[in-house]
Length: 318
Image 1 (tube, one colour):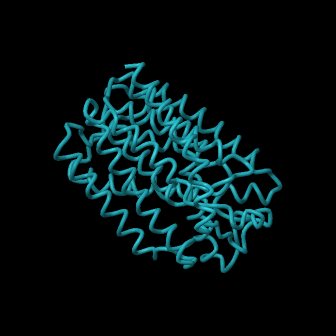
Image 2 (tube, rainbow, N blue to C red):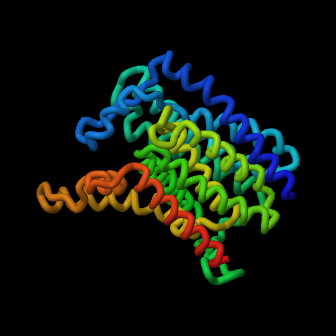
């Protein structure tokens, strides 16, 4: 079991690390440059033109590695389905923004429709072709579960869309979403191996792919993952949560995703209610810290450390 997990990490890391020097120049050549918000932190203006859609590195590495083990580990299939499905929605959004030069990308309705479709396919596969229950483990209460009956499926849609978009909001600084999700992937790998759940090649493949990707994404980044990568990672986290019957744990290990989403909701809501006032200097939350004078590396280190500590807490909760 341990040998397979190590192999999955190494293979995925090798693919990601070797593909980077090929993909990044290609993205520059086709002019897939990042567009930066004019109302964002001034320091981000220098990032204008940095290649985006680097999430293709993650998707390619994870898919290739997972397929090597799919025959012996069929439970990785629904996770790969949701990961790639959300990644493709993000890819379409990125393509429209940076190649077609339409700054808004997919409309909110188009993006939501794509996410609902992919999530629906995931639910169908999960309930029809696996023996995984939608009942949820309760953190810190071993062997106790919450089962909402007919509400399990609507809750799954809510958790999956919330997690994916929380991950998407987190992708705003060099290395931030990749580093945070690496901690989450390691957590899921530890749990998957310990429970012999049969999804460990997939969780380890994501960990390896992110380590390879971060070689090119840490500050100053040579490439950004774009929605291609952030939505794919969100789909991965949600899928693992459900395959391990641990969606409630996502609020613990994904505390950064949660805070990023809440900061946007609070900012927008308070702005409308108060007639133009703001709670934060800027949302999502990481931009608030930037405008308070924190460096990107310091914010990334803090958020990653918090995630690591919360992952340890979640392990204690098992």
